[in-house]
Length: 422
Ligand code: GLU
Image 1 (cartoon, rainbow, N blue to C red):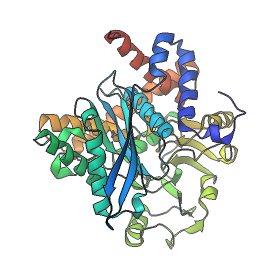
Image 2: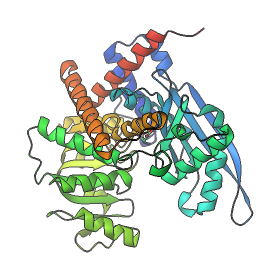
Image 3: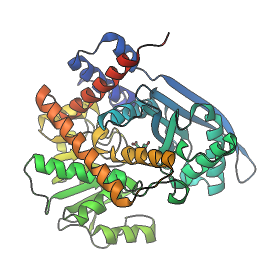
């Protein structure tokens, strides 16, 4: 992996993915033919579509759906709404889904979607019309056996309900298993919403155990307090971890004695932000990120740990709740500092694992108790942690490269078994 590259190149998510893929593929001695297949997404859909806004204007939106691989099963992956979505980002996220599903060994390929928009400035009606039109634009490429979307940044249960309804209207009957992350009463799964956070907690527990560090009082800093970060923080807090810092996009909080996450959640519910929370000191987010702690959890978006701040990070362990929070250049700096990194494609896989459970339940028409979801999720996360650290030990590589190697090996094996259709 190169160390002297521009920041622009460093933070391109597709470059970040490719750097790790190439490195792991070389280590694996991957067959050059399979390398060619996995090196680029298998399908990229770009749509430009009109939506009538509340004031009567027509706005033209651009949306993407990228299917990186469908070798191991239907494409799987979220849809994000953001003003700065790019094709390269969606490509990277789609391939991370391929590797993620392979690491936890669930029968899906990898896909991702995105629409360039500013969801915070749109009404519910505008969001609904945009979601339905985007769904109809990509409708022939999605489906329970083809590609199954889910929530990602700025999309949620309601977005999934609209997609499910639009798809069902076209098919002429209700098809719940076309998306996951739906509301409970229309085919959602118990435990799906907090599953990514729950998976992160399992990875924190396992990491401490592996490194012989105590759980009680373990100091945690969480960057991002959305669905993933807030659920991880809450579950860790309840288990006796001490969450000492929260870094949000609009400011941070710090309290060396620990922040009561339940109080903070109530505060955020009431005020719409964590800013002004009385029981912690207001500290700029970039300072919170580099404060001393045992576990740092970047749980928001890409590129928060880069060559600009990696050398100042003072965590013993990093557990990646977001996709792509660490650049490839930063990886090298963290390795020199001997920080134990639990990579995104393992650490945040609890979400898609519970999505797999939702898809199974929808197809069975039989819904599980929350305790069953939690038990099955925890077992998969623990087994996957063991697989990755054992692979790292056996091959003398770090956990991220081990996770990539394990995943690439599984996908390559499937492609060889299936053969190339001619
Ligand atoms: N968007 C989530 C992720 O990046 C969930 C994907 C899914 O459940 O399909 O893993």
